[in-house]
Figure (tube, rainbow, N blue to C red):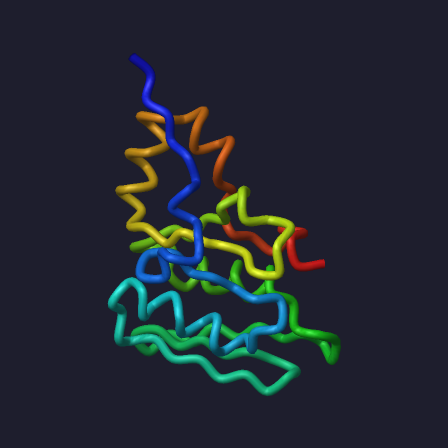
Length: 137
């Protein structure tokens, strides 16, 4: 009997497991909300309209927005890179088209298990956070 995975978990009443990103949210707020969901105290972020710095465990990642507007997709991709050793951040496709977009941060081993056991469902419902996501443009 096939198991059906839905993205109903990506609704606003799941704030304790889903990273909700608003189109107008400040970049440092995005970068600090996700670790709070994951219980990662060793992450901080600073944003000044031209760049974002994310620090985790003493390692600094800097995103330079080149004088243009900050881009949520770039910020989320940088956050995913900072977390990548332990976690993966995926966009819930069902949330696209709203003013908020849902991202599910899970340990890498959980994503690997889901992709192994439910490859079609995961591919249909989620996409990894990356700078080329066009959901905020």
